[in-house]
Length: 472
Image 1 (cartoon, helix red, strand yellow):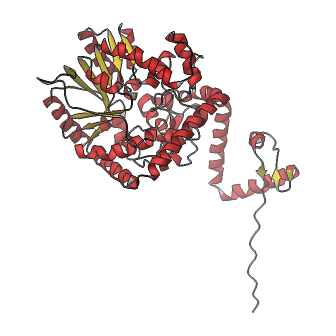
Image 2: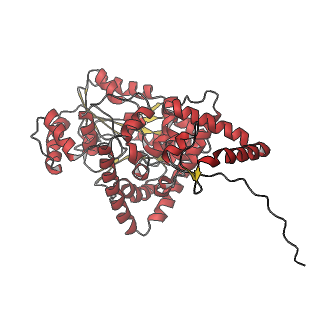
Image 3: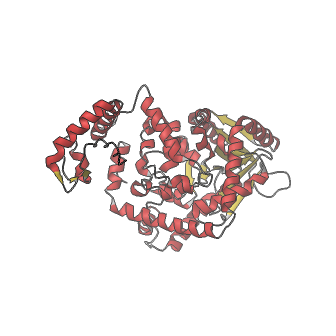
């Protein structure tokens, strides 16, 4: 595994230079968008379902405290133990203490970005437990000792050849690049692990307040096995995952699979309502639900930023983002990459992710594809404004810092029309010797960086309008 670059800028620079990474990202993203376009075109009510889902999320976020109380009451009625964690550390500690109490040696995990967010795996491993990711993509990146590169497809940055070599090295499986054989190899390995696990952990796509039901949506069955085979099960969810009613779920299921994976519906949708009851043959004997805040309340308090809590983590905005498709997920140096990650990461992880709202072209493709119509460009601009107005602004590296200082000086000058007119005339006069056919192909320092990549139109002094002729 290559050494981890020290900053977003180092990582992005390395990713931009990696042409093989571009090929893999473009191939996977294009395939996904083709599937999405197909399933969207054949489903006429798609736009109506988007509107319905957005309305439900807005309603839920507007009365989040009320719904969380209702959810907690109904979960506890069903025999679940509910823990509210204000911080990632509190969530980690609760789960590690639980694993110690039940003397867990082996833990299986379904796919969960929230557990990535709280860095649960390192904490459990440090406590002496074996933690195994059971989603195929997560299993692959865990074998490589790295985090997911995409919210939905964690190993999007790898080819089938990469995975073949990985399994040969880590699992002693004879090399092959056939996806079916590689999948069967992982399946055989994971089945054995499932049967001996003491604790299962998954995320939650939705939590229904009305019934106290956790909904887990997935394609591989590993989420269902993680939540039913071990005697103890933990669901970890952010506070924003709660929705009011059981009848609301269908609207999200109609749009989630289409935008996330280009499917009409995912293979498995599990509705988990409490631990095993008397007379039932399977299911966990003990169930815990960890509800995490970790900066989400501060997002809720911001009238612009709270819209980001509508996100259902489909990952569609990553697939259309020209920046993500160029640099991949690891370059963001955050659990949540891409456009939505650039919004939530600064609020979850602080100033270390403060640069991410600037890692966007603001093209609007993310807003167009979002199944709940989050206006991501508007929120990114809001975060940029907040960062610029902050008492302790970010420290930008070399050329970027100079460019931003120059832009600030220009902004101050642009507030004075006479000064602007004077410098415009002066600039037009001084640049005249560099102009050819109306364009300047090389400018002197400090503007030379601009013309290294593109031509600059020759400035022309504005001519005063002539008074209209009176032909009368």
